[in-house]
Figure 1 (cartoon, helix red, strand yellow):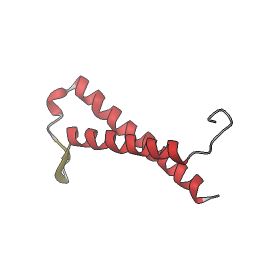
Figure 2 (tube, one colour; figure 1 turned 180 degrees about the vertical axis):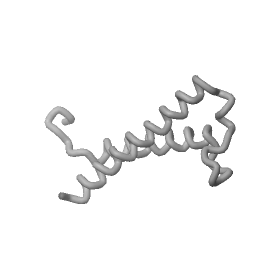
Figure 3 (tube, one colour; figure 1 turned 90 degrees about the horizontal axis):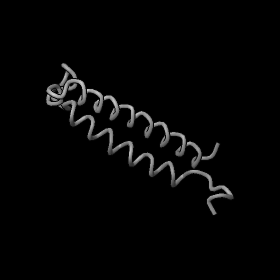
Figure 4 (cartoon, helix red, strand yellow; figure 1 turned 60 degrees about the vertical axis):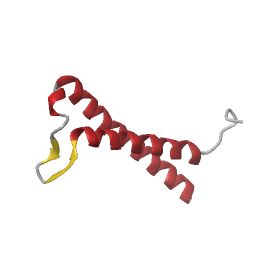
Length: 78
C-alpha cells in the first residue's frame, strides 16, 4: 500500500465521520435548538454543541478536498 492510498483512505474516513458529527448537530438544531449553546460533554466546558458542529463541518470539508486531491486519476477524469 502506498502512502498516497493510505492518505486517501484516511481523508475519506475523516470526511465521513466529520460529516456524521455535523449531521448530528444539524438534527439536534432541528429537534431541540435551545440545546445548541450547552456544553458538549460534562467533562469539559468546551466545546459547545454548536461549536462542535462548526468544527465538524470544516474538518469534513478539508478532508474531502484532501480525499479528492489524493485519489487515483481515472480515464474519465482526463
